[in-house]
Amino acid sequence: MDSSREKAKKNPLGEGGKSKWVRFRDSFEWDGVSLDDYKKSPEDWHSVTRRVLLGEAEESLDFHLRYFEIGIGGYTTHERHQHIHVVIVFRGAGEVRIGSRVRRVGVGDVLYVAPEESHQFRNPDGKEPFGFFCIVEARRDRPETVSESEKLSDL
Image (cartoon, rainbow, N blue to C red):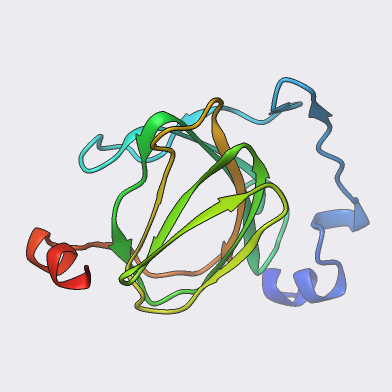
């Protein structure tokens, strides 16, 4: 009998050879995808939502594709972790802080966040939500929040 990992290698889109289409709506929603809070606990973040597009349902993937939106004045947790992730800006504009660098980013920009680099995404003065796709490994470590003293030493 094939393990789930062997099945995924045979068909990376899931059981039974079925591909999947997640239909986009012009209201920045996708059919059948729930809108969730960024994290369960509201500590250290503000006005952020999350949608998991691929990887946590019936698909057997080595990665997850998620979409985040940060409302005007919102920000993600300032954190670090061992796993890498790739971010593709899809809506609006915002700021990304990686280590001590802060950059403005907008639609079409692509970011690579290396392991153990502290990072945070913000929408300090946007005219609309700042939305981005985030691709991460399916198996990953838990993020560690950056302490206040570390935040200051980064600057």
